[in-house]
Length: 256
Image 1 (cartoon, rainbow, N blue to C red):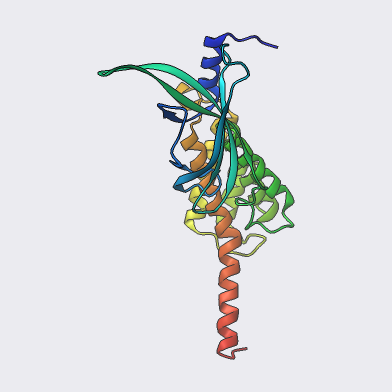
Image 2 (image 1 turned 60 degrees about the vertical axis):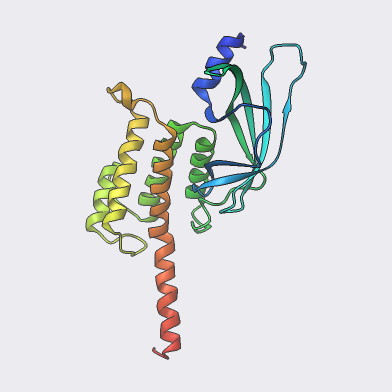
């Protein structure tokens, strides 16, 4: 067990956990401007309840806060555990203490199925991999999340679409010139997004010589997440909708 003094603890939190907000008091408004971890939409998240907890009031132990929040877009509810770091801020009107909130972890109030709801149940490995990628993303492990989404891409391409090749690059190239196992039309957008996810995922799996590319930001991981959901939509959602629409039209027009 490594012992950390107050300064080391503060540096550890800043380096390893996602910054959420700064507030000038221990109370917050009933809504905060943020981005939902589940539907990935910018929204004013509603805070249902919150409290601070300190073991002893006269020691130097950090303050912890728990938010119970709800997204107005997807109605998703979640508990977020945070650590609160106080600091003295200088201004023209004098100095005052402000409170910086850093997310330790996110505990959903129910199992998250947002990323996997459109993936058919028989593709269990793909579902499991996507959920692990999302778990890493929620816990601010952006490099790990990116690598896991690349793994999910390879499962989608090789195991589901039936691409041939010894590498993911060759499998993606195969899909451009051959009929896939699901016999669906893959657009240029699919190929472009797949290639980008592969390349960014490779940067996570194989450290780049450029030091600026050795770190992954929240924006990087969220972008890979969104691109992968577009692939899921093209492979599973659109073909099913088009098939259903054609069948309904044929039935209404009494066509064989």
